[in-house]
Image (cartoon, rainbow, N blue to C red):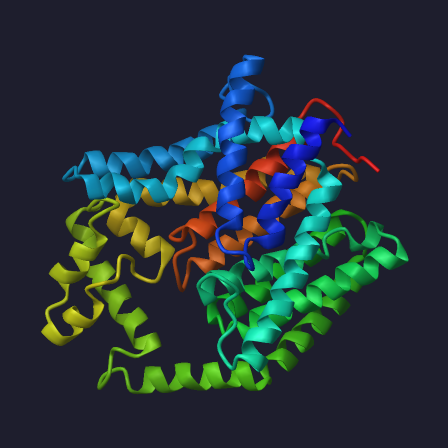
Length: 401
């Protein structure tokens, strides 16, 4: 394997392998690889907006960033506004990143790193929950911890039908540990997403011709039974009971976990009609919360929230209808572009990563921000850049021994 490929692959694999357990490791690795991608494209005289490996996805990602910038320029411009824009910088650097990864990322190493990431997430979750007696969160917030652990778990199973007997056990072990992390994170948003990822995974296996339609049905029933069994665990039952209680007492106490979400959703729906096209600006969501909540006690309790616990509502408030369109394109267009690759043996794994990634983020956004945390942006942009870049590369996809 060329030295440059070894260097890029090692740095890149840090992101899925250690993003949840070593503080800032994923973000630092992402920054280094992204900065090197600028130098690489300049050195090779490559324009990422015309290069075949990055052209289509580049315009999708740049459009998403551009709409965020537009929402600021159309409102009150300030230093804080551009600071908020900085959380979207991942989408701006993605075109150059795609080119670099398309040429110097080892696909097999990426696969192993994903399984390591799922396994380590499970190990640290067991330690934090049972030894430290606290909600599992790795080194990040518990919600993105559960979300990313869930994706790593399902990513681990994509190619299981094409693996050796030993590799199958590693994949299954990684999946189980990763799912344990999801349960112990007590992240209800991730739990809601799991059945949809199961459907996506079964569809992928069917497109790969790894299983028949009858087996899809059998596995789906088994998966539902498995999810049902997991829902009977003390951790899940406790969270479900708390949610039910929060809903029951909402009229009397709207500051519970679920009550806060409902209040923020109502606030967003009330605010959206005032600025329907371009929104209030990416940086003005806190001000919207203060302006559109009349109850002083509730306003004081929620004044620190910079989002509305829903990606779609937050986008409509911050960036308006144009922002929502850019978000939907970001989540829908990549799987559509690479859909035909799902049935191609050499490309199926990478196309499947993109499909499950976008399914996951689509549902994560229902109860929280899908792109509000730097770590979530890092993970999404890296997986999408790596997968799309390798799929569109003219060279054979790297499978070094």
